[in-house]
Amino acid sequence: MGRNKRGFIDNDFYDREAAYWWSATESPLAIIRYMMNPIRFAYVIRQLVELSYDYRSRKVLDLGCGGGFLTEEIAKFGLDTTGVDPSVPSLREARKHAKALDLAITYQEGAGEALDFPDNSFDMVFCLDVLEHVRDFRTVVSEISRVLVPGGFFFFETVNRTILSYLVVIFFMQEFPLTRVMPADIHNWRYFIRPGELSQAARTAGMKVEDMRGVLPGLSFVYHLPRLPKLVADKIDFRDLCALFRCHETFFKNLCYVGYASKPSRLAA
Image (cartoon, rainbow, N blue to C red; front, side, top):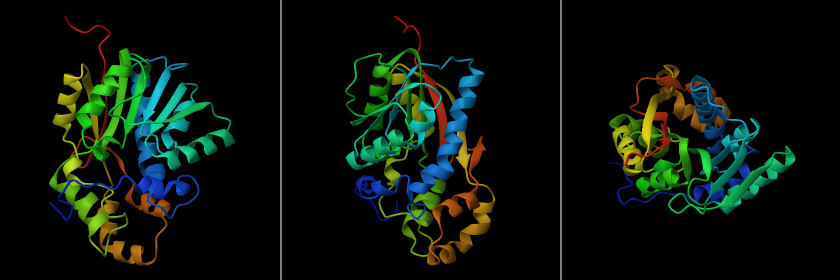
């Protein structure tokens, strides 16, 4: 499907755009900050409250932390927070921003396929907007389970591999000249993950998916889609674009979805 048929995905984009993690709304990185991060962080907090989980002083890993949008929100709640990312320029910006806010966050270079931590190192692992960017998400999920303590939680958010996700994420947002607002090859439809595939990967790794919720733009997306050519021509501010689309949680998981898995306190013999 689409122009990108050879499995290429441009993860170097995050190196090139690293200077704009916190300083600009003209970069597609603003979509993560203003549209996706508030939704998924609200989901995480709600689930922890419903679980009556005492998260204070817990050790947390934000895998694929980028410039630290989610990492900083976690640290502000008093958790012992570590962020890992393969993008050295992004980590540089993350450290600089955390230092300016006097946040105690450990950032280190690394990849999800081979985490440089002992077994049972973290109470929670966050891997949000990451799994659809790696070649082997099953290995990443296995590594997450390895570093997660028994009784710990794995929070995820990714993109479903459907016709709808191809049309919205690949065709309209990335490929079609009149409507594209993101660079080519930042996503590859072949890397998108169906919920059943992620659930199976979690089971194989010794975890159980406890909840999944869809994430969709509001009906305003349909209204504004025909206006995208003008918005693109006028160089719309990405923060304004996020406000127009008004993403929200839903039971419908055919585009994006967020959820969490648990690692049993005792693995069955």
